[in-house]
Length: 239
Image (tube, rainbow, N blue to C red; front, side, top):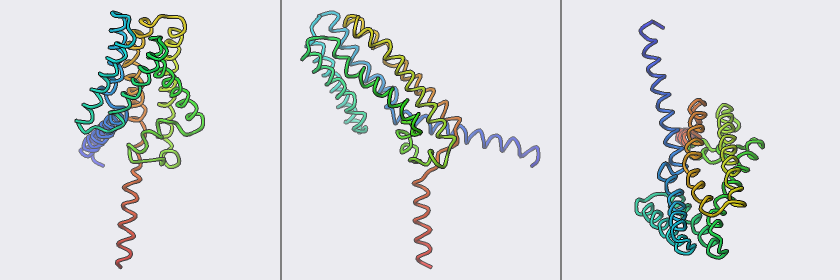
């Protein structure tokens, strides 16, 4: 290799790394709903606590939060977004609204989401310990690698394990703040703290996931491999 070849190779490697980072970023935003998804999971709770703080009326606060969530979900559908992103927030808010109105305790608006976050934290940690990190199960199909990362791409398995631990520990820390407020604080305290903890932990988790995966080997496209095998079989059959 000549001295003139090295810069070209370095440029090609840099472009390849940039493409890999861009693909990872796009996949993460697609899987987790992007910034819009984070906002959609936070704003209904903000509306609930704001109205409840002013009016001290659970029903009006819950109905307003649920109505806003429905509007956001319909907007997703009109924009031809995935059903998962369109309805996940609606169902979460609906459970909280019904639970709060039936129990007569405004704090219960937040309980379903808190239990979901705690359960998700445990799932991230348990699956990582079992050798099937949850983030790999979630993102494997997005990257078209399915479970190839577990047996054929150990570097990516390590990255998925680290990222799953990060998600699990961050969600556990969030739960450790919120549950004492649920037990001993009032509804407004819990609501404002939960709103404040809505987006930052999510952004931190996604950022760490991006860091781990950007440094990992590229995914193995098992779909492309299957298509190549089918073409090879077809070509062999024609001979």
